[in-house]
Length: 405
Image: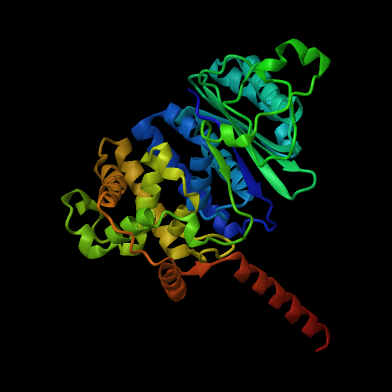
């Protein structure tokens, strides 16, 4: 069964500062390479089609965990890092936000010419997936972002996002070509979200005989569907609260990251010398690479790798971020020449943390963990959008004062 679904997200303002987006791109590439090296290209496409994994990935690279901006940030970072290496990776990312989304069919034709894939069939799939979510299923969300990710095997994933005209929310739609038989009869595993009354769903199986007549079909109530399809519904508050995080999972990661605990495991000898804080980030990244779908039910937990640009739960620890990038890059590079020991050690981090969960009693005090991060902000080189805003306002004020000098 294909792994597809939807995510209802909050619209937050504010762009990504250049210092953060540069790091996002630097971390994105070795993560993708590690997934492909150890699990294959098809596994990466499946992960992209899972709304929970996608949101967790966005959080681990430093985006606000419940923001609609995760979609734009992740797809921009992926496109800018993967496409220059598409020949080696066997992946091609087309489309984007706004006007960029309209170029998707032409980009897919180009991919077809370059790879031998059927570009016309891919362009058709792109147009139909957009038509289904924007027109055939009229749920109040109008598409403004459309990305088509295709593998050189011909399999593909679509990530697209719509904005609601009145409620200040965005909805992300995930498609996966695996087992997709028709665009006009039940192409989704389900269409679900907050109940907003009847919606127009012309690809419902009951609408087969009336598609030409544009018959309104009332959707099933979301409660009965949510059990069958990955559907992410995040809170509207701009923060992370203890209830958003599985404290048992987080606690086992914090426990493993302690230097005295890491020394107990021979499998982690190649990671000796790394500080506990970097090991914390690497363990969460290890889970992004190797974790199964059930491991991503609490995307907010992955913000404990590198914080977030809005400083919720804490500002981005740039020194830790940079060290994590360096370690992962080196692990991927040496694996390409036949030495995958360091990559296996990173994989072992998530496995050991999961093993520890079995008998682990949650003792991670959420507030204390966040307070500790904030107390070490200067040591970790922490930065956020707040710092950026403060700097801009200070510069404007200084410029104004000079006018009166």
